[in-house]
Length: 427
Ligand code: ACO
Image (tube, helix red, strand yellow):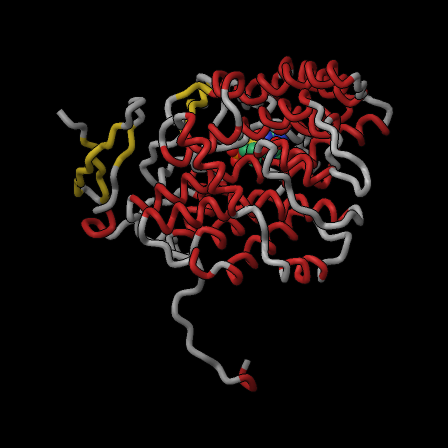
């Protein structure tokens, strides 16, 4: 028998159907609440609010489970490559060899951007943060690809999807190259998606690009770990903007801006900056632990805590192991890794962190690997965006295919009630 939730307001009872997910999660469907009772729900930060039904990513914050389309993140990180995972997220199943080849061929077909885009990039100061530049360039892509806005058929959507997957790595690489005064380049179709991205970012004029497979493998794994995370801040932004039918590129551009913030994807940059600060300060982790616990001090232990994971972040476990491996393989010694491990150990034993269920999140160790791979700190969040791109696309596509209505939350008004207008000389 289907479950029902009952609500009583001022002695009047209302009944609502309870929706059950395939992993037995329960959601009270309150669609009729306002119509029947006049009341709405109030849930700042949407801590208890489901915005959609989705078949893409499952995560259980209490048990530390993360699965894309049913596959465990541990398996995908170990056995799949990033493009396979992108296909899985977007289209629902792992691709056959032929499907994967066609997908990549279609992406490669779209891996140039209009030369005029270079003028837009040129207008930014060198000091501009790459996330702001990337968001602007992604938005500018709309102007050069107007057919990607009004997409109603699955084929239209597919065309927009392979376009953004082809062009986004070019734009990301260009933001880095501009910052480092390197000539803007294009990729090499004979390389894999991640290797090509790496080449576009780091190829130097006059030097033959040499591949270090350990670097590519580590990068591939990091991108997979970031590829989707259900209805987080940037993904919800993508779905919200997309719900107005603004188009895929505009929606992704908004998602990049949301990801930029230090409480979200920007945390990976903030973590390294924090660890560096601790190192420069003499490495006294206890001092910074005390600051994080002091309610009068705005300092937070960056890379700790998560809205959903209240046990551990499974991505952080994989990344911590990977950090040890990558640094070992590349022969990199980073004193900041020891500070990070020390900080983690102390936090996991500290009552404040234990009581609040604060564990290292995906960003705590990712910056250390990015740095070992030679990626500059200001590009860390761009790397996150590159990884999250398939997730944003998958969520946008699902939202469009489900014909979801435009996102438009309500509010409880707490301002003045009606006031009589006074002319300026009477105020
Ligand atoms: N350091 C110190 N205290 C913290 C931290 C932290 N990193 N995170 C949460 N707390 C404390 C809060 O002060 C609060 O304490 P209180 O109950 O005494 O008031 C309690 O833990 C709950 O924290 P909230 O901020 O209410 O939790 P919320 O779910 O809203 O926020 C968030 C989650 C934003 C991730 C938060 O833990 C945080 O700011 N972490 C640091 C930034 C970070 O690493 N962000 C990356 C998240 S992962 C991602 O986006 C990919």
